Length: 314
Ligand code: PPS
Image 1: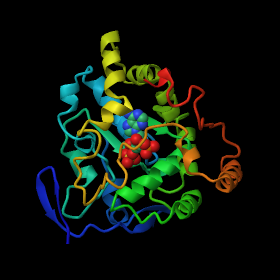
Image 2: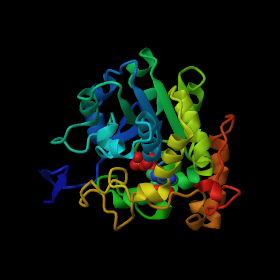
Image 3: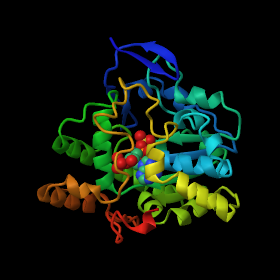
């Protein structure tokens, strides 16, 4: 039995890796599937902002950028609580004894900013009915799978990843929580033509954060003075966020997230996949990728020309 603390609340339950089940053919944790009626019936409000991503695509980064924009670059206000308290993760059920994401959202005053990893077809219909603004962030599949692999290792409630080789196979087959990366990014790409969706790329934010932050602020209809923009660019850099306990998930008890195995803020880079894929894995992945991504206009960059030390990164 492990005893853990979240926000000072002592919890006594065995930390075990969540089992997978399915909703409409999409693997989700069994805990989410068991409460699916609550998630599907979630009531969005017209002034809700939803940040949607495939897991490990830059969600936390975008959440911090958005919070900073909404609070005019006031870093103290953005340290009022951890990411998951500031911007509830609507479908998330960590444990039966803890408040699920949708209830945290229900308890929040408007305007609310919410997070989801759901594929577009599983987003609660009220978000479309209320015409909510949505920011979607996508990250290239190779860096995404590497980040996800390490996240599964460090997060003791995510399903067992197995070896890197095994995890890569599961990822390619879409047998992971929130389903196929390929279908996720394509589904949201199509949806952006019919809804108020700002579709962003992790690689673009990394290459030119100032430009992408401005795009987000325009989407949120918020003018940013140069000084505030400078502050947001600075505060949301990887190195700064890595040290920010309200954004780096060190508030989560180590029984659940073990940052010694791999920190949540791991590398924050584009192109780290090259340190993991063997030549054979890369060839196989590329061949399969071509098939799965055939017929879409969606393209990704898997490296940046300036390299990871480019001044454009900061
Ligand atoms: S989660 O669990 O789905 O919410 O994770 P998510 O936040 O989507 O993704 C975590 C990865 O994003 C990296 N990250 C950043 N990169 C660059 N700059 C900033 N500021 C930043 N903040 C978070 C984080 O390090 C994870 O990527 P990897 O490749 O594992 O380092």
